[in-house]
Amino acid sequence: MKHELIARRLSYFLFALLIFGCTEETTEPTDENTLLYSSFEKSGMFSSDGWKLPAQFDSSTDVPAGGGNFSLVLSASNPPDTAHIKVPVKTQFNNFKLTFWAKTTGLTSGINGEVILSLVRNGSVIDSSSILVTDIIWKSYSIQDTFSVAAGDSFMVQLTAGVSQLFP
Image (tube, rainbow, N blue to C red; front, side, top):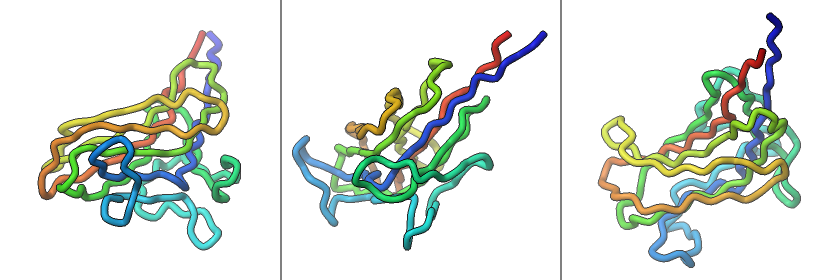
C-alpha cells in the first residue's frame, strides 16, 4: 500500500507579536502594560531568544510587507511541532490581547496551524484562548480575552503548525 505524506508549513512572523493588558478594547500597548514584544530577529540575524523551538524548525526571509527580515517556519507533523515562550503576567490587568502576523502554506490537508495563549499557574495551564491560522497570505491575527490572573502566574504562547496526515 502506497502512502503519500501531505505536509504543509506554517510560517510565523512575530516581529509584532505582542501581549498587553488592557482595560478596554481601545487601549494601546505601552511600556506599563506590555508583557511581551518579541520577534525572530536580533542585530539583523535570525534569533529565537526566549523561545523553546522544536527540533525541526527553519527560518525564512519571507515576511509581511514592511516588517522585519526573518520569520519562523514550523512544519506540520504528527504530533504537531510546537514552539512556545512563557512570560510573567501583570496582575493589574485582567483583559489581555495577543497580536501576531502569520500565514500557512500548502493548506491541502485542511488541518490548520494554531496559536494558543494560555494562563499558567503552579506549572499547570488553567485557561486558554486560541485562534486558527487559515490564510495563505500574511495576515495580522489577534486573541483578546479576560483572564483571572494572580501573582506568580505566567502566560505561555504556543505556535503549532498543525498535523500532517497519511493518505492511502
